[in-house]
Amino acid sequence: MEVLVRCMDRLGIERLLLSQGYSAELHPTPAQFREENDRVMRAVRAFPDRAFGSVYISPAYLDFSLQEFDRCVRDGPMVAIGEIEIDRRANVPEMDPIAERAIALRVPILEHEWLKAGGNEPGESTPHDVVELARRHPRLQIVCAHTGGDWERGIRMEMAVRELGAERVIYGSDVGGRSFASQLAKVTGAEIPESAKELILGENLRRLLTPILRAKGYSV
Image (cartoon, rainbow, N blue to C red; front, side):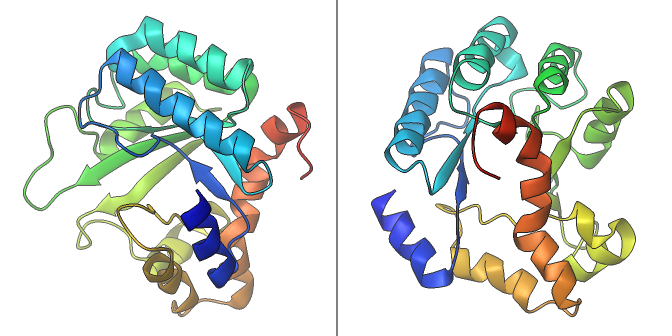
């Protein structure tokens, strides 16, 4: 976090939304989920003005995940769910109780979803799977990570703004796997209005998180 904050300061980034600690496995066990969540909560508590936390869970371990949600979000400092990754697809029935908890506390879910050129991993969600989940839970707030993956079938920044509206696009750094600067450049270099860039770079996420932030006593 100390290194990340120095990088954030250089680029004018106000806050991070952290998930997964720093050594998450591709198919983590419940013990590893808990360890990663503990790391995130330590970071949030050490840097309360620079970081929010997002609970790392999986529908592959439903009962455990609901307990982690209660520990980390309902009773802890975290303000979102995800990134939910590749152990179960987003359309499985085990996602329904997680979605219901998210709706009850008005927290968003960050869902990992791809259309990979070489094919998805078993259990890895596609955008179509996310659509199924959204249809079952129309009040659920879902952030679709990676804009669909394969760029020929996914959505580039200008197209997303044109098709969805700038108010439904959120900048994400994927920092650790990517750099802040390269991901910021996708927004700052896009041929879209400055007002759209302001929404994408902060205002949309601020609006999305406002209910849970207020409930937890954060200044918004």
